[in-house]
Length: 281
Ligand SMILES: [Zn+2]
Image 1 (spheres, rainbow, N blue to C red):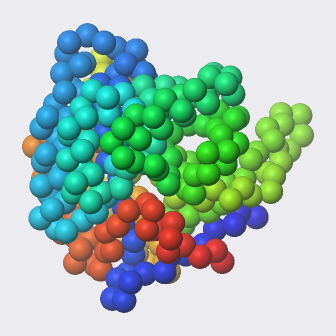
Image 2 (tube, protein in one colour; image 1 turned 30 degrees about the horizontal axis):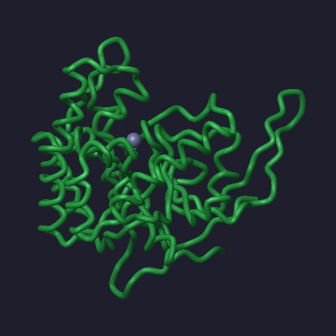
């Protein structure tokens, strides 16, 4: 059985909400999509130069602290903008170096990526508590590496939706049942592609249509949020990208969602605070 649990909520609050900002900038195009043309680079540039300030302003307006997943390459390219995020009292977690696909990597290669990301974060004074894998996938070694580097939580997997749980390694068998092993001490604060702005919005010729109407995206967020609200001690993890939700059409629904959630008693907080407030069943 999965070892999951609940969040201890502050007095008067009904649900924990994390707005995770995956500040990939150009790294997602370079690492995940292998694209380096000026137009793709400009989409990352927009995220850094326009999207981040808009989101910081929105968070400031509502007194929201979020968690920013920042690849080392973004730190090295947009150092001052990353420092601005930190000076606004947000949390920063590890998000790879060049938004690389970890799944085909050897243990040694993946460890080098981990180190390189940590070195970049250290340059802006961050020693992260948490991790979010690029494109939300793990290699068979990722969990072991997170343990070796003493991470407390991860936020990339989908074994639950509104309740954190301890990650169990899985022995994958095809000729007999797969076997879940003993849980690690890394807490998973789960995500969902359904609650991520990128797939619904980003048009990538030949790869993704994107461009879904914002009202249907907002309805999707709200219907999941309303369901989560009925559960005791739930957390709702929304993932936005500055280059996606920093655009005019998206930042308006993000603000609408914030208002909606606030009126229902949302506790907007960081993944680290969710980790600190977690207790297992
Ligand atoms: Zn990312």
